[in-house]
Length: 405
Image 1 (cartoon, rainbow, N blue to C red):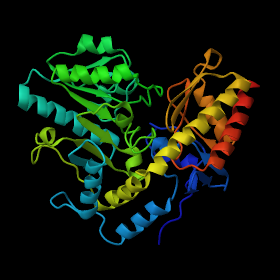
Image 2: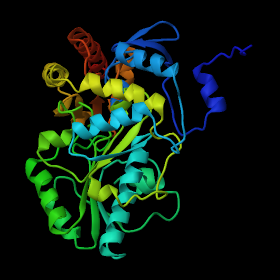
Image 3: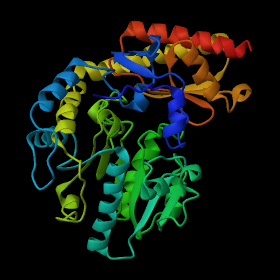
Image 4: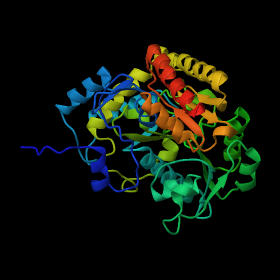
C-alpha cells in the first residue's frame, strides 16, 4: 500500500535541491484557465506554466490522447520508431519550412541538438575554422552547459568553470553589433524571434531580415529558438511566419506538448544529413506517449480560428493593462506579441516585479516575471474572455495594493 505523505511547502525544503524557491501555494487540480490549491482556493492562470499550457489545464483533446495512448504503448527505444512520432513529424513538416524533425524532451535539448548540428554542418562543409556561434545578450536557450553559454545572461552561466568556446554575443535589435562579429568563421547565429526571459522584446523588421541577410552572406546558419514563441503563442503557428524570415533550423518545445514534456528540432534535408547514425540521440525523445499528446495539442492549436483568437485575446489583455496603467501609472509600456506579453515597470517601481507577482497571487492570479522589472503574462491560447476580464480585475486589485502601500 502507498504510504501517505503530507506534501506541503515545508517538505520541499527538506527533500528538494534548493535551486528553486517555489510559492507556498501548491495547486492540485486545474480546469481550463483556473486551478485550485490544496485548500481549494481558486486561481486564474495567466502564467500557463511559462508558456507551456497552451490549451489550459486538462483540455479534453489532450486528456483523450493521453488516455488512449496510455492504454497502447508508452516507450520504445530509438532502435524502433513509432506511429505517434511519425504522425507528429509529418504534421510539423507539412506546416512549416522544415523537411526533417528530431525529437527531444525539452527546449534545452532541442537547442543542444541544433547547436551540435550547426557545428557539425560547418565542420563537414567548410572545415574546423568555421565554429563561431553568435547569440544575443539577454537571450535564453536552456540550462545545459552549451545552451546556457549561448544564452546571453551571465547570471545563469557563470560559476561552473570553463565554458564551451567560440561563443560570442551581439546586442538584440542592433544589426551593426552583429556585423561587427560575423565573419566567414561564423557557423550559426542563434536568436529568439521575440526575446522571452530577456524582457519580452520584439525584433524590428529591419533587424530580423538583416540578420538573415548577414547569415546568407557569410554561409552561416540561422537558428530560431521558438521554444517559447512556437505553437501559436504569437498568433502565428510559429513566430518566423509573422516576420517573413525563414530560419535554417528551428527549435520548439514548451507548448508543443501542451504540458507534456517534449521538444523538437526542425530543419532541411540538406542540413539534417550531417547528423548521421550515432552522432546524436535521446533515450526518451520521440517516445509514443509524448508524441501522441503533442499531436493532439498541435492539431488543436493549428486552426485558423484558434490562431485568430490569440490575436483577439492579445488586444483584450493589452487594452485591459493599459486601462489599469492609466489609473495607477506603474508601467512605461505594454509590449510583446500574441499572448506573450510584458508589462514594463516605470522608474518608481524598478526591480519590484516579484512584488507585483506575489500581490497578484494573493488576489488569486498566477503571473510571471521576465527580469526584475517586467511582469510577464503567458496565458492559455484559448482562455475564455470572461477569465481575461476576471484576471485583469484581480491584477488591478494587486496593483492598487502596491501603489497604495
